[in-house]
Image (cartoon, rainbow, N blue to C red):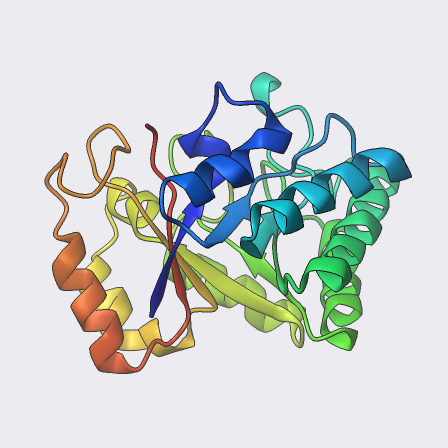
Length: 236
């Protein structure tokens, strides 16, 4: 396992294009990012500028969220309600992935039950991602009323329906806050996680600021054979 940093949550007051360099200055050479644009379909100059911010900083982007909708208003994904935005976001996200070698794309599925239409779009997107060696990540979330993916079992169930090109993002903070038995989840399927994020609770702070046994969980992940990235997704 190797450690990376989510630049979006860690540097909320730093301009988007300056965050990769800030991470590098803080000693990180691997980063991940939430969707870095104001819309699902940014123009080419915006995409070029974001890619340049990564390469100029000398960091590796390993994971990036796709467009989640109006997050401030409570949206958590657009695959069901806005297929055009979802398609635009997927196209841009995969292009950034090709340019930067980023192979993991976290995809929020929308609030409420996952509709058949959303399921079809997500499955097609996963196949499109797989064609270029990338993975559509499905993540349990906490503190969001009626979000349909709350546990590791929920995420694996959806991934099994989506098929090739999809995988589970296990944010140990979200799982713990949702009441998951994280030790049991790791023992059962930790080796199958596609990506892992951590923060402490309460407060979603840095490891050591709360009560979660993050060190033990990371040791357990290593013991069951998890070999992917672990990203710090904590508030400053």
